[in-house]
Length: 240
Image (cartoon, rainbow, N blue to C red):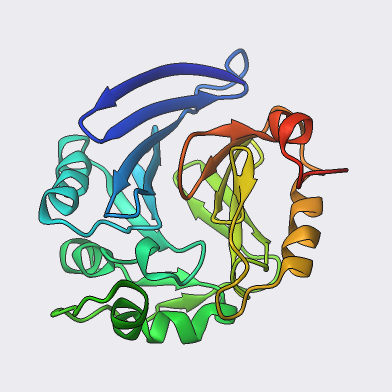
């Protein structure tokens, strides 16, 4: 893989990936926005066709929401999917902004349906806040073997229960990039003490992720990017 660009824009980073730079003109552009009080990573992913997907829109503050909309507008992107790695509120605060601007509703695993239907209750129970807006309904539940297509790229959906029952990762084999939500972080893993969490299941999920190539870039739901090889070498929870 060749990382051809990286720059900081306010609270965000831009990455470009082309794992087949000698044989392909395709390019995956990834804009990371660090948002909300929990410093969650929201990603806008696009390619040379300008079609895009939005992953884990946790934008809470108005300036964060506007930064995402501005980026999409300034780059003439066409959002096609709003994807959620799981149903925790910090990864879904901004779903209403995406729906209001682009008509997209979240796509998620049915294992996290209860979380997604109870986002306002999460705000009260987990964050001690009242949400004065409505969240869009769930558009689609992921099916076994499903792929998410946009532009000239596609994501495989890897089920990674453990942090929540319905956690998933999105894997682009062509560009060797994976979005892991709160399952795998740089040097750590997600908590399993929330409702639907399981330390046993997350270890099984991590073992599955560990089978991917070492040079697979991991873009987590919080913190810095890493790779499968780095985590196998340094993360005590990762093992083949």
